[in-house]
Picture (cartoon, helix red, strand yellow):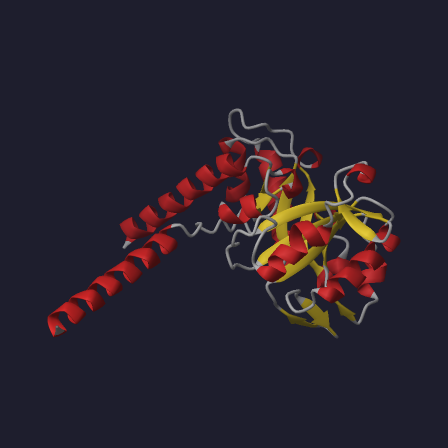
Length: 279
């Protein structure tokens, strides 16, 4: 009888270990350099990004009847696609709209304001109070990190945000102003700009030396301000991605999650091999 009980216990332990291994194997590999641009265009917003290892995502918003509608334009036809329904509520509960579990990882949500800045920000500020238990905050200069960090881009009311003693957002600064606009440094976590405003190179041949130097200088300035650097609307190819990373760009903006994921995972594997070879 005891031998039978012992066998069952061993079998149970094996099953538990097998299930645990399977769940662990399915955990996405974190892509610290990946940025899901216009994430709400995905078949499953937020879910697709997190399941592929992305933890930086973007949502464009308009204020419409005191609600933040997630869309690039024409908010009249997207009434149910609100910021809280698509992003904040799933991040609070840990499940998406279909009820599937989300990876439990820190997330940075870039909210790109498309409508009137001050009115939209007031609506966002009020909404974030409902989710304050998971939102990173800054109180009298002291930052308390939580599961979700909100960064405001687009039509951002910088002076309005700076005037708040207690706030739940940070700013995406214009990368080209980093060297002459220190006023946003204490509240800024990112520095971004359109790729074509700095570079013309599309990935054919080597990046021109002058363009590389220009980009590296902007990156160094942003890093001195503790800002993550991102270029949006960049050519989506491995040559450009490799050059951006080599210049210190922190976040690769993409509309092609799987393509960039494959590139970054290969880059991670090569880095590990190089470290192993060095030892």
